[in-house]
Length: 367
Image (cartoon, rainbow, N blue to C red; front, side, top):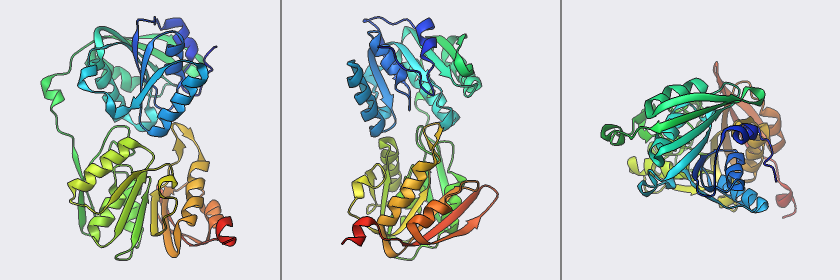
């Protein structure tokens, strides 16, 4: 069965240039696209696929079962030193939508994971990520070549001769970021594959500067990423009962570490797809830097669904605060879920929308 074309991988390029056998041990970093891992598995390779969240692992596992192939899908943080130098080949799809840092980190990881004779095939989509890849790949591989151009200007690159990481690079400490709002400062470390990997997102800072949060209330940081919102609010008033959730296991681990870094032991950090893990809980305040994309794809329905579900988990006298790009029109879907919707603040890039008085859901209407 042929692997279908997807919005990221051009599998015709893999058909032309990738060479795998049943003896090939292949590492796939396909992020949101399962096609590369499925293609390699269908061609007999032993595939280990790294993904940034549990839901993407489940999605890939279901796709592999449907095609009756085996893929060892793992969280991106689970590749250990015992795996270094053990892979014959690697596929990497351009994670351009996450920024430059994940590209560099992925190339570093692959260069350590490959055997000395191993090969990396990297696909950049519509020119995105190509220059960044060439820059970083030439630091970690002896030879880097463009080998093909596919549909929609997809470009396939091949890197060979991985250069082992130096001891100094392996021991470099992560950069610590400091966020100060209303005279409260917190310390955060950021991570590849987690929202805001290149620096604390200015939309998050704008939300914290705008939102008026009472003392001692219950707070939900929805889609917490590295935890900037929840950790700041918990540090500002330690009587607040703060819960932070994210669909990404990597984000939850990072946010938990950041909470400990700021000496917060009462903050709960949970893996949750939306409100799934806190379905029976309600909060006095909900805050979110709403997502605009599902992977690289612009998907307004994702934010709209979170707004709708937030209304069902907000106390009657509570407030929900959302920050989005100024061009995003979330006011109409917000008005369907809340009786009161207002733009609390806006600047050249962002707007903060405050929502109050949640409308009754079907379940509450019927008791």
